[in-house]
Picture 1: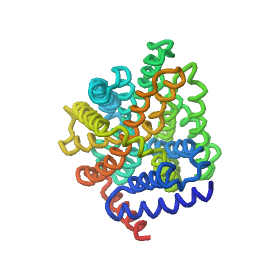
Picture 2: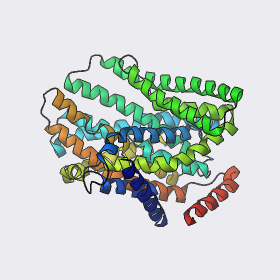
Picture 3: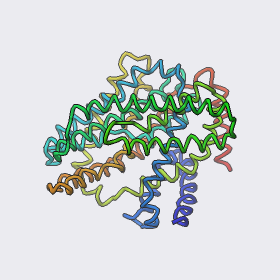
Picture 4: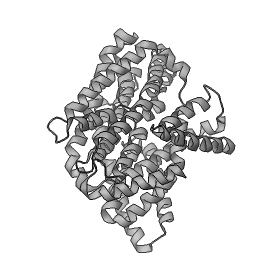
Length: 419
């Protein structure tokens, strides 16, 4: 297993370098590498590594969300907070509603089955979006209007909203939902509880770090370990109270930044180095989950419903930005940033099929849902990442206070590529 991981790391670094040379985001190459090396194509990845791939992907997601929290300034969040709330729900609802209506004529699904598919497809991928937004934030691009911060925060909330809606729908469909009102109330409860726990934890960590002054490496280990415990806590609390662990992770980083920028930047720098490893693992493992055979079963109808769903989502996203001070190109950047699918679709795309099998229902609709979910990753993750990078470079302006920092970041980035 360790040999398989080493091979993925070496190949991932090579692919990342090659794609960057072609001005394509490295994560696109890593996704393709995962697909090729995965069990459904060449089968290079050790089965033991695939068995623990969820844990690897989760840890990588924790790393990038911690970095996101450590980059979120209170001032910027206050400026874009209202748009964040709108973007966290409106585009997902419109996309899900469109797929619910289109599912019966295009895929032969029932309306409830189409709604379940819509909930799965409506989730944007933080694994794809967040790393790209952090890169723009580090270079000060779009900082004057807080555009990357807005997209980063909204995409994280979007997932919480969509997953709760999915849970309600699958519960109704399989007859296992006991209290729909409570589950719907779980959306604000999970968000508030997650943010609240994160803020408290971040405050306590700040006090701990100031009192005992551990080295930056130890601070990173403490924050990472606590973040993993948040995720464990979400699983343990699930039967009684909803808790958004990944929002708690972001909130922890956010409050550390507010309390002490020096400590936050030290931790973020260390996490940036860990991310080099975590990024390869995350995207190759996500790619390895993609069964191209299943994706192709969705056929043209599957591609059409994904495309039309994205059109509806884009209309909703653009509508959320009306009345803002963003220019048309900047609004289109946000629209494109809200297109990639990967993380949630890979995690729960097969869940309806398993739920239908468990209660003895016809599994045909579950197979269609899985096929379309997999196809959405194949079609949107690479193109979405590429589109975000290209539009970001062309439309996001460097804030006046970040011009010198941006130049330094570009020089540093070029130096890394040459090495």
